[in-house]
Length: 267
Image (cartoon, rainbow, N blue to C red; front, side):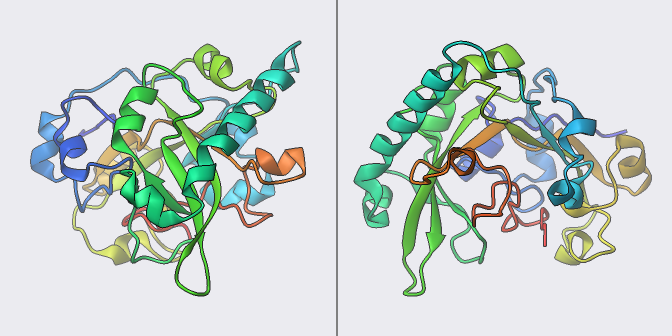
């Protein structure tokens, strides 16, 4: 069986050098040659798949998404979360004009492919976030497309290593308030046709029916237990606290559907 652990950003990885961005489009950027050069990291804790996938609005991602479980509120949790929101809002202010984000080194992931949320990401911030949490330096700025063709700033994304512990995630943003997520169980198709990843009968990718290494191997694919590391979105401009930490697209914030990723379509 061919299996890969595909963390968010691996130091020294040819995929990191090739993309110079947060996200890696499996099958389009990371070739078979680069796969052999990747150093595998330990597979970290994945949360509770059963509970994390029980919500109806997550049913389209069953088998390909894990979320951290909500913990009981502890003293100081709300204050810590509020401080992150305040820092995120302050970090966003200079970049309401997306041109300033580009000038500062943020890069748009797949700008020519329509999707709900556009990630403007900085590779250096992503690397730093693997070892230290600084809410003033979000890995990504989140924008929606405007009718005029520009971008409207709506939030930020923070990241952590694929093997980060629940305790570390909780130290960064309390798990009583925020639910971090990972994309998992990605089967790369043996051929790079997009049709292998699209539609109701898709077998491969994050909308595919294949969710195990055994099934992926039988289909001739390459299995990745993790596609990215831990991620969490924050929407500081929202008035309702539950929308600030939204994990669904009920309010126009499409946290989970990275639909623009080739081979990872979630339509």
